[in-house]
Image (cartoon, rainbow, N blue to C red; front, side, top):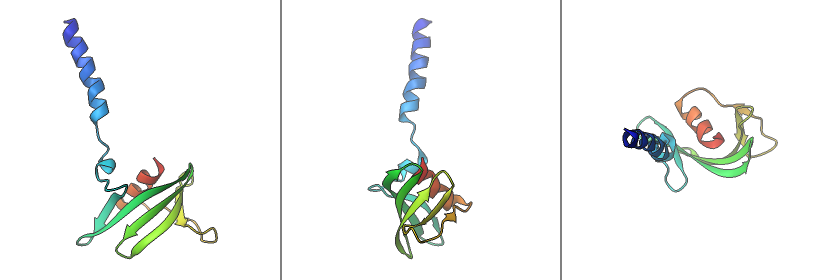
Length: 104
């Protein structure tokens, strides 16, 4: 009986170590797939650094590659240029995935 309890506890602990975050599972060389729209037009995001709450990141999309910064505390982002205005992260799967990847 004690062996069964021990093995059950061990299996619970072991399973927590091997659970993979779905966003992490999509990584390719540090780039994470945020999502796709239309046929094959996908958006990828890569965290570059910074200290919370301001995080620098890149977005690769069919329209090009852009360097941005996110304010994770205020839920907003802007193109990396202090003169550019901040934009709120919009609701929707791609924006939410970008925010989750950058700000977690």
